[in-house]
Image 1: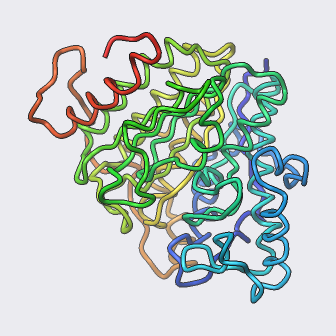
Image 2: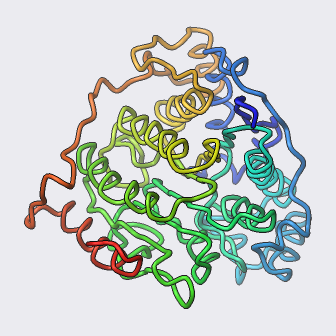
Length: 390
């Protein structure tokens, strides 16, 4: 297996554009790639532009009638069918929507193929992680579910155990739905509680169905969760599950909308804690998969200048085994790019100045603590189904 890391990138992914007033501004992708280059990380990875996902690949997850509806809306946005979630406030139709969505999906699928075949140990597609799209509909700013497609492609290639870890502030509902009855796929989502945030799913009692019972894991954390609680919940659930499941490939989704500056959610997580989870995912991939097979995706994130580019540049650096020092001063050339594109001033350093720490679950829990209540609810719901102690 090659020790190199692949970074999936094509400038055309910025064509995934719902319009100026939409929170998911593609400038976040362009600025991330600009910061990757400013730190010289493009020299530490193989930058690869993959082909768009074709019809047969898209049909691994999505229904044929939905694909036809996306194509029709892409050709004529005025004909978008809202019964498929298209042409809505969340998912406005735009010309070229199918092509841009298929291109992003193609990068994630190619990333999965690269790590499975041994062309790379790790592969990153920060334009991906569009985890809300369902087999038959768009949802939550997501047209095609590239994360589910990457996993489905791994199964098609012969993988028998794929673990998916989603740390976006929103529940990874589309990926869970795609594999709800498939014991070959373990989906774990840490997210804000469905009482207070879209998509109002991801309760701890959602544990899979049929043969997949025990293969869906949901940690629904209270609004206001900060670094210590978020990291405690991650480490109280994820490593033990992976040790039991022994995945052949680890796919992770790193939506940066857990950040305290994100305008669409209610967590209080720092960039430094996000970086800590990225490092943990990297370590877990090396610990539990052969050759460290790791596919890392982006996701949500709507603080498009101050948070998203820094977070995902850290992700690229970690995957490239060339981590960016959090104390690094951000190159002035990138801050000039930020101002030219947005008329905003960019951040100065690659840190929020936090030193993340957490209390390990093994040291005991506090039944009055809301984060601990959430962790315990998850462990009690799913761990016994996997033969583990809650």
